[in-house]
Amino acid sequence: MSPAPPYDPALAEVAALLADPDPPSRNRHFARFAGRRGSRVFRLYRLYRAMAREAAELAARPGASAELVRERGGLWLMLTDPEMAYRRRSPVPPELAGFFRDCLGQGA
Image (cartoon, rainbow, N blue to C red; front, side, top):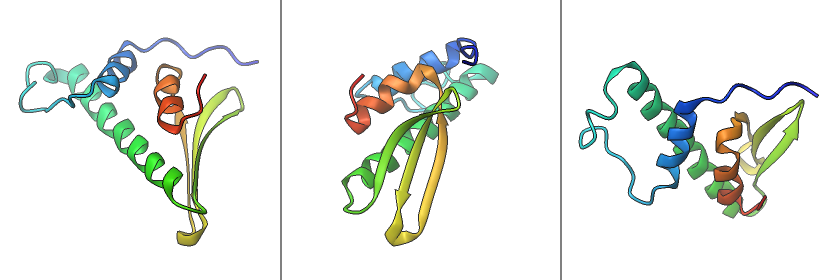
């Protein structure tokens, strides 16, 4: 078994942003997302929000699938749509595993 990846406080902040029903705006919250760390948090938030949206769309489409798979000591988001010949495999950080499980209705 591989060692757990180090805890990333930026990803914990991203998880909190994803759980918030009122999405943040870079303009309204400029001070919060200013600087190198804030910019990274906002960039990761947008990336994972887009991945979650795509996963939800595929999960609802007949024939397509979106699932979390534990593989090689990590968690992966697997998106497939045979109709469009589309397949995506993306790593999911441990801090965001719960969010993606909830998005896909996979529980704990």
